[in-house]
Amino acid sequence: MDWEAPYLLLLIFPALAFLLWAERKSAHPMTAERKRILLIVRSLVVILALAALAGPAKVVTSTRRALVLALDLSQSLGEEGVQTAVAKADELRKTLPSDVELSLVGFGDEARLLTEADLRSKAVLSEALKTHGAQSNYAAALDYARALFPAGTSRHVVLIGDGHETRGSLMEAARSASLADIHLHALPVVGPKKPDVRVRSLTPSQSRLHEGAALKLAVEMESTLDGSGVLKLFENGIEVEKRSLTVKSGQTLTETFTRHPNVRNIYKYRAVLEGFEGDAIPANNEALTLVDVRGRLRMLYIEGEPGEATYLTEAMEKEGIQLELRAAGNLPTTAQELSGYDGVILSCGIIFILLLWSDQLLAAKLRYQPEKIKCGYRVSDACSYLYSVSRMLFHLFFKSGRISGSVSSKAWYFGSTVAGFFWSRR
Image 1 (cartoon, rainbow, N blue to C red):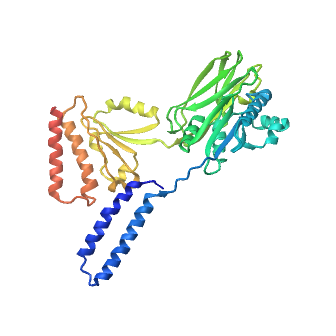
Image 2 (cartoon, rainbow, N blue to C red):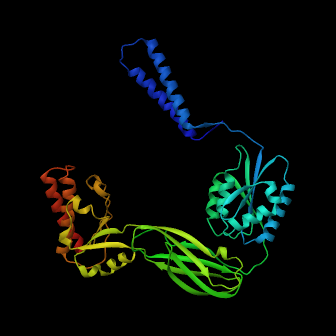
Image 3 (cartoon, rainbow, N blue to C red):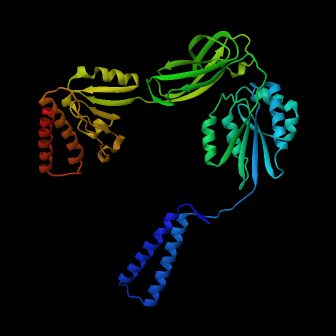
């Protein structure tokens, strides 16, 4: 017997003590016998409820074992390499004890269940190589294998292949499998060397960003031949950029593209290699990625000296953030005016970053982080800022009914002005 949350069982004793205290303090006109029965019933209900919340579990020890052999059927191995992988799988199967439950999986761009007859059929393997061998998705094979294990068995997966992953993320899939107590093994297989240039990955700097923000796309390539060709980048099916490349055998090359998607949409980017003479496997010359582009952030920036806001405005614009500049005395005072912004930045002296949550501003929790800034400014500017802040907070809290009273409002105004004077003198 085991428990998911055994500490909840410790609550039984204070709960029973509380029920006993409540029973003794009860002034209800009932017989003593009836009170005792009611106390027993309530105690049983509390004990059973806490025991259920603690999560009792029966621990069963099993000696059953299960193994999944996942064979790489991609074109990077070729027919000769696939036959080598099948031969290694047969050798491994012969060494397994008879009580091991075995499953076979073949994968390229997708995974599928194989039978022993499929492993013996060259026609089936050749067809899989042609139809699904353009890519190697080790993560999909591992996820597929996880679904084949029977309950109550120790689980092992053996990946047989060359390790060239062109889709998915085996690292992430392996981490997830380890949490499910799945043991992962690898059996390397090398196919015949072929002249080949391939795109290993297309990685965006961000999977989600706002309109107009800079997006960097890193294309990683490798080659077993020397030659020249062209790398093209497609955005939603339209060619947007191309570069001439020269590759050398055994070297890895990385090219980075920069895009500024300015329309809210799901963007599909595709990198394609073309024009390399002697490339034996053109099916692995491309890679895909998706990027979610959302609407632009709109921020309100309050600055006493507009000239000081130039650099921040330009930096925000590069990141796709729309910054609206206002003078110190023009701070919005109502929730309706502020609802059109995602945030407010008050500059010079004290910075308040107010996180706004759509129409719930009147009931929102305003978080502010005061931070001293080393800059020169006049006393009147600081007082003007603090006075504007006090006006806004007054309208949001005093006039909304959260705090009432003219004395409180006057104290707020006076305190903000005095604080501005002493802050500016520091």
